[in-house]
Length: 418
Image 1 (cartoon, rainbow, N blue to C red):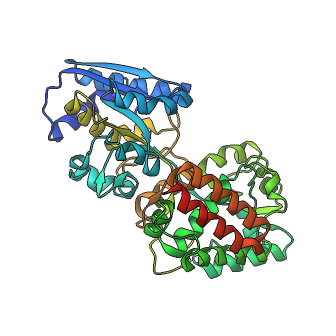
Image 2 (tube, rainbow, N blue to C red):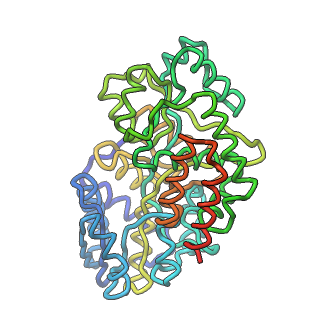
């Protein structure tokens, strides 16, 4: 399933090149800036670039790797002056400031090509601003409900298919003396995950994105319905006590020890759950079920991306590099367990033989027509994300404060987006 031959990427580059509308001969310099400074991502990217170089011997590729935190502070400067030809970044709202400033190239032409249009469709919304696409994705990972299958089996429960069965399962778990869900909201963002799913399932992806963009009042009745649904779970005791005192890692033992039956979390939680002793026979996964049957299912899948700066000098070669990065076989290779260990975005790619990666890939490739969100603290501006996630945490502890919380968030919306 995974290619290991040294020349694999080079051969793929040649086949990708012949199939693409780009010219066969690429020349000049191609400057690539990366924030993949950790060892495994760095090695993955450098090997991929080296093999692309092998397929294009007349192209002089210069790669610069910058520490991730430093990259965040430097990106606006290097996009403005002496821009590279390719730079990696993140989807959705995280790319919006650079789109609005005219610093990212419109690559809608790439998305009009059948290979990309057909196989990357699930992430098109995350790459779209003002009806145009501004980059391509190269990796993502799923969110969803990881749960103790052995506990479900003991209680005679099956995976929920809608909101009513979701709540019925939860009530049965609570009645057995356990919490439905563990969660640690000490650092706020985990509550953002619950808001994402409840709001997208109640009001749909487009509404959720409009709220993140500041286009909807926090006191809108549709937002209040999201919180009303959330409160149903809070009132039945769905969540562990004192979650505001735990980080997400500190909340894991509740699930490991069987005091909680599930965790709404990203796929990165699987490794520590396995390391803590849970087997794949005990641990399973399901897609967060529908609440409002009139909205399509959308998912949280934080997505890493490549972009062409508007001030790039070799945009032809940059476009060919982006085509290469998102091709099915390259996506298979860079995302395998020996490299990034995440999910390929191309629906025609193959996934390492891992239970949860396979379930996530199937879900994101075929079962999430409603769109792919990036997570609340990526989709909303940083200041709005912070104040709203503080509100989410407070609501989970003191749900009677909802009106005051929403009034505060609405004041923040009017100030921040102004």
